[in-house]
Length: 139
Image 1 (spheres, rainbow, N blue to C red):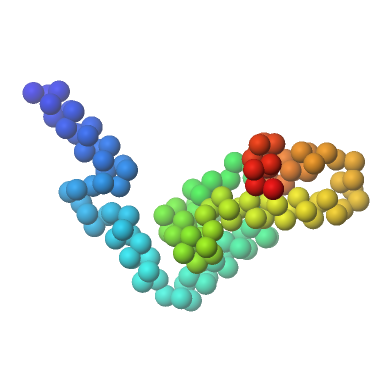
Image 2: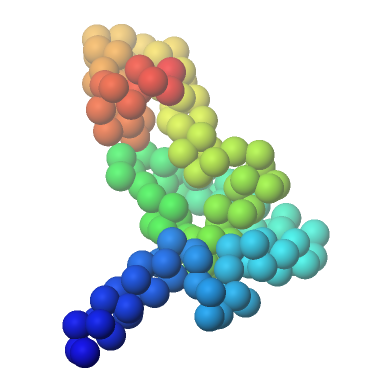
């Protein structure tokens, strides 16, 4: 009897974690997006400005293992909201957004004399890419 309940709970918990919560549909990803659609335009602009500021001023993109969760923590917002803002209002995924800054950093460093003796891989790693493969794929 206990194993039956445990199996049932594991199944429900697994479905909930992938966003298929049949018992609590108000938390579904579709309803979450609708909630985010109600955010006023000036608030969205403030969020986007904060994201851009963290990238340009704080240069968070240089952190090779920067994650959506890390950036959302810096902004003190939910990671799902951050993902929504980037996808819906910047038209880029989180990784596309961050890698845009990294590619521009590589380009800027290639133009600087002090990086003339650095390899392209060394410049890429200093610009936030965590491997040659990720740099080649993006660049």
